[in-house]
Image (cartoon, one colour):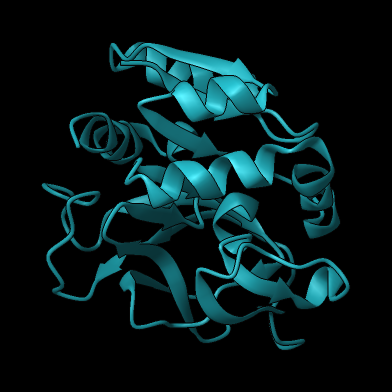
Length: 198
């Protein structure tokens, strides 16, 4: 039951792979659309600029992910990988996201320092979440981002920094986190264990 960690030229792939190794999961870093289609679960990590996600379309990875999601394959987007699940981002308005949820990622307001880097708390909103199971509200997780996903109907956890934003989203087989579970200590490893056990 292999987890495909999608390599589209950016992202802290080695750290994500090591985190899955720590929780005993079998995972592979791949840029091959065929391997993504064969995987039991898919993880899309991301750091840096939203424009980098355009490589997903040109490489065939986007279409492979779409097909896998239609078949019910669990999918986890991390940081920019979560932002890509929306229609677009102000960071690169010409680049289209996957469009699972409506709207665009927006920049933090000028009143706060950007990027938002460091530990911040999760506030679970009470919705039943398989991804956040047994992670207490108030847990600290590690963020590094300049753009944020607004609150959505699918939001399961929020954080506060210059206003409230989505820290985690969940709908059916689709999951996203704005923070980096691979850098978030016990809470992050528990989240990855939950994803593996879906």
